[in-house]
Length: 511
Image 1 (tube, one colour):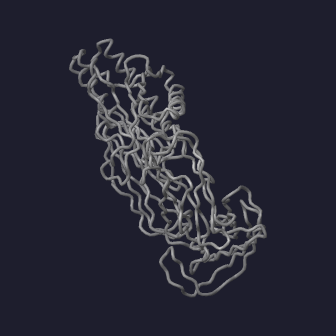
Image 2: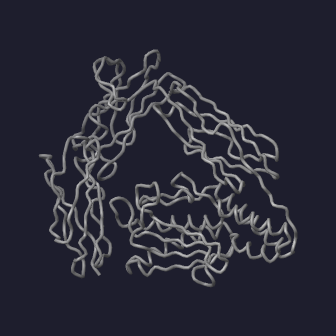
Image 3: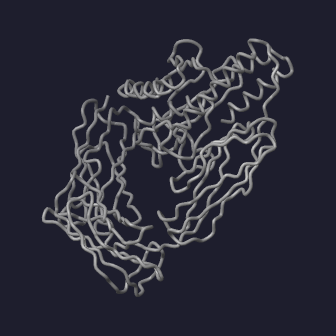
């Protein structure tokens, strides 16, 4: 990360000048294996404090096992502090309120990093999933350890402003980078203690081209690229490359000696997607000025085949079963012969046959025109693998070695369903709060007409998806509920004659 790289340079510059007192002061900005955290949860609702503390401790334990140090909460002078706010303003250039804010301090007598966590996220605002606490604490500790932010959600350093519902996982590269940062910090502290002069190490990254543009390619044809990376600095340049998609394959690590050039070769797998595709390749390095460089990747992939589902990919599944029809369109000049069709994920069977006729392709903005291909008819038994909505896959085996298995995803459900099947409110107080759930059904086949509740302190807004397959219902609590358990039901009215009303329990309490 930039803060860590700058701290390293400051220490090295003072050691080179034999300013050992200044080096000692600057070394306080380096990460330590023995980290003290200050935790201020005064603004957290009392009923959530223990749960948030448990989430915090999960992140602490993860990092403690990696650093092999003593990461503690509230025992000594803190290096990282955490506090909570109801919400935070939008960061520049982001259309969402911040989920957390991070403020670094160069003052050796102050905490190195101050973190504020928002209790509400998203647009509209909604109470955070507690898993966000673990994710943000893990990210903050990783930042303190010297790691740079990643644009890829799901890893510890790939944070997001969204109300994330998935625990982040620390990657092998993040573990390696943090371990290396701590070893560098230990070496510099030893040099300060031993009053040893050190010349600053100044690796630098310079690369061409700045953008990878692979032009237009047919789906399935491999596409190679190459980037020349030069090190005009005075010490080895350590590089770690992270693509944002498994479809981009490159060398993951490299070391470039001073004055030398490294040719980074890579390939994009065009068999997985088609269209105007953009990805990113992140190059993390020990260049203090550019510790993290983003290299855009652009390619236009023309499809060799397409699945079209005229009735949408959500099937209303009665107990007596249903029919799902899909069409496999093969591009002109491309020969592909299906040999078998099947259904996976939900009980059913499928057959495939040659087809020709008129059909539009809305995803490619193509009007109805004559097409030839294959018709896939899936007979679904009516059994459900789980309540609510289940995912299924049409699987087509072919005689083409590059495209041996083709898949089309779909969903089945018992008519219209609410997800989740109850609106969990948690513990509420005198402040207003916002909650939400989804109502899902076949695309364009139903509409939510009204939402009410027999509990007077909740009003609702309805937001449809673009294709009409889902409606997000936002519940707005007015902050005036009487103390005790909430006893109420939200009534969702639709224009579906078979499911005119869906009742969803309200679960929670007012303190």
